[in-house]
Image 1 (cartoon, rainbow, N blue to C red):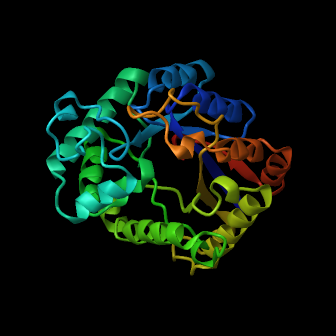
Image 2 (cartoon, rainbow, N blue to C red):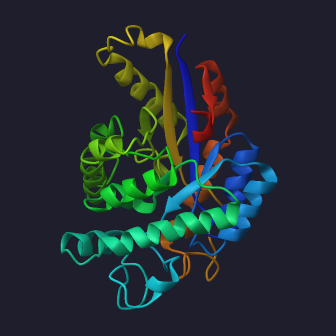
Length: 308
């Protein structure tokens, strides 16, 4: 029988105490199995302490787009900052990159500072490292990101290529354009990460099931169709019976209790995403016993990157 290992990663751990508590509640309910820490988040130290207390598998959510740098030297006069002294933002970072305005040596400096701060907060290096707002798969950045992972011996990351994305007619056009850009960047990143010995799960899910689009049936459907598509690919000579193998999946989620200003964020206060009712909606969906029953019925085992 096919075995499925599912990593349910709660992103943005450390963003604010309410997001932290929501993610911990999901972990204790068996609904989240892994977290990604924003080391420049206002509640990062609290998050690291919670991870220690509850033995929560934790990796690094590298952030180059929201708030303030972790690297002291880059907090003034850096290409990574806008005129207000903060990172350029999700779209602003991409615009600055496309115009050739970002210094890649500063990107590397900041990524290394975040790995070091993660180590300082948690007492260990991250077993996995991904990118806040998917910055890690962007042109140029992907090379620097891969070099940093290889340098620190970080083996796992996320490559956000989602099966079935193109069929999701409920995603608004402007958001779909962003997602398709992430997908294209991810396809162009595969060879770079592979050449540095970096690995990632067989299947990624998370764009099509985010926020208000998350439901028990949507998660079931996304997992089932992704597995079907994965198994339909021609078996390799070394794996002639894919049905007997283990398939690994990462489900990216953003649960929590919504942030209440002015508390939270990465230096600029909490954004609309973190204040949204959708964070609580994700939490309530993930802890639904129906979802847990589905995992058991399908021989889906929740795990973390350390278990791969």
